[in-house]
Amino acid sequence: MMCGMQMSRILLAASAAAIGSLTLVVPAAAHPDRAAGPGGDWNDTVYLTFDDGPNGDDTDRVLEVLADNDARATFFAVGQSLEDDPARGLRIMAEGHVLANHTWSHPDLTELSRAEVDWEIASAAWMLDDLGSGAPCFRPPYGSSNAEVDDAIADAGLNKLMWNVDTEDWRRPGVDAIADVLLGAAPGDVVLMHDGGGDRSQTVEALEIALPRLAERGYRFGIAPECVVG
Ligand SMILES: [Zn+2]
Image (cartoon, rainbow, N blue to C red; front, side, top):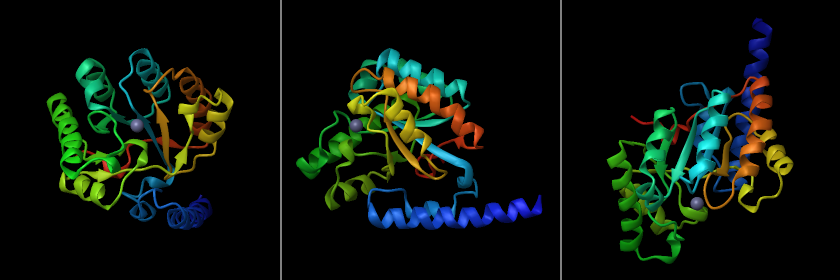
């Protein structure tokens, strides 16, 4: 048993090094602090994220497969979609997930003035506050940001959370293609998926395949430290 624990520590160190080098190659990758481990629980946790909802039945189906697998996730919702469907935003939070800011209308923020960027972030933040979400994280649409956008995010008191595993599910590449990317996820990874932006049935089916198999490896599905409330 002790030997196994020691081996885990060695593997953890190797994983931390891998995450660190990935961060150097891809600036948008997981936060470097992740390698240090928030609360020491990063070693078995994969961070699932769903963008661009809420989106009717697709969001409900994602929530159902997450519940079936005892998984928690972060939903980067679009403010105006939450205004249209606040009940689904409330359901997301009631089921233990985090509802977070993905702007009001999903523009490329690098093409806006600073005042417009501030408005996009603040309007979505107002909607989230109204629904009772205190999530401290933000994801820019298309992952598109620059120094000015990053300043606006920080000035709003939010942490930017990008991803380092992209399922490209928005392309609808097929259930197996999405599931294969999911099955390649490792502890500490932040995985990008979508519950909005179109028909997400491939995403749901891929989750149904992959989550039980990842759980068999001992992985859990939790909330990224950048998004943990309080
Ligand atoms: Zn988006």
